[in-house]
Length: 226
Image (cartoon, rainbow, N blue to C red; front, side):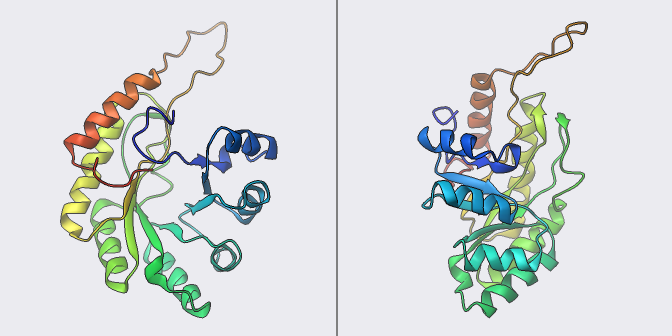
């Protein structure tokens, strides 16, 4: 996976936060982790103190934001609503943290075909994402764009559609972007009901080739990618 993806590979701890799994990944060279809760912060830090943590849950308790910034040194977060911006800024100021050193990604809602859709639950509509990016930039945060197309993506065009939407947002927001996080969704072969028809899974090589082509087509290939 790391060899095929043209950017930083981060492991989403929520998929499996067992210490044995984290340890194995660290030994395999993973040093960036997508975390969503204080328990996940603690698990990763107890195993690999120097790993970078990306706090990518769009809805966060103020106490959890404070813990992330103050005790775990997290400086990359995500939002999909104005209220989250206000919370992050308030806590950064209370802790006397220079918020211009922080990167806040705006999560964009996307549409596509996946076994488990996630944009019905998280993500800002494109026009709203434009407003959020402009507000973050105006305050002084470094900004990024992210999306998550869902789990077990069923067709490669799903990422192309998400990148097209991200390009629309980028052009209208007209602010510098520090990075693009294309989330997860990469399909894996799992067991199936022996009485049913096996589910065809896109080969990772095919999907990554299409993603690379789409990144070039929409001119995102010069941005730091996650």
